[in-house]
Length: 282
Ligand SMILES: [Zn+2]
View 1 (cartoon, rainbow, N blue to C red):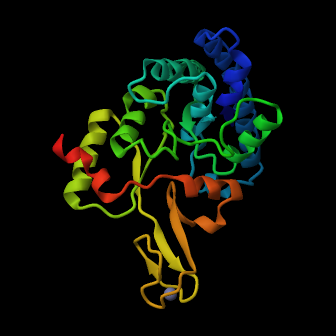
View 2: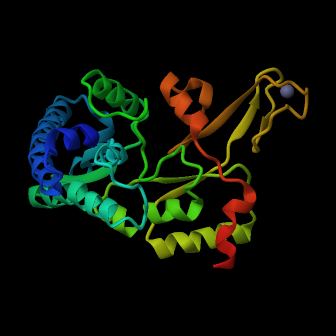
View 3: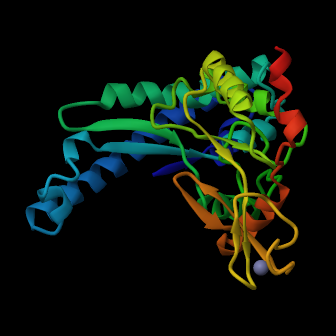
């Protein structure tokens, strides 16, 4: 169950006080918990009726399965409040506290035998598009057709790799016990040393969940697949190409994304080799 933070923030804030956001979030989490507990009860009924063989076989254990409070529209809520999206912005950090801490605390309070809650900045592959459309239809402040799944603006070329690590570091992710993957989009593969430096930088910022994405190219004519982003097939010289990029644990062809998500993908900024290695001198 995922909370649309942009909507919550705009409905809550009328005197620019983050306390309103905290209060509304606390009430919202209570509702979400009720929904998740009902969902959990249905799962138990189904298991009792013999309808969940993977549970019975021991592949999934319900007591260890988290009931997840999802978060989407986080960055958009900050934009709606006019807060600068920057790792060093005290306003953005205070906003993160106001939005995420109430969920984290409510989750801990609601924890009991066999019931575990956590919080995740969800990928929202299709929900990010729906939330944006619903909010726009209701005349809320909406800047893009697909809500971000990150703490940084995915289309912003000024956000470099180190900024991304900082924005997915301790200050922003400490309440996200269900995860918030920081996708580092690179135009090309790095050297082992460069990767090692970036991983060290990640440790320093406290970013504990990250992936490196380098687009793969698929030739639609001859089927050749390259681990690099190419403009032309090296085998048959066709320019009819598709690209595969990572969606958390697997690769997906960009052409199979939902339409608005494809547009968002086109806007994603892939750091070039030199920029990506900025950290070396640090
Ligand atoms: Zn080809």
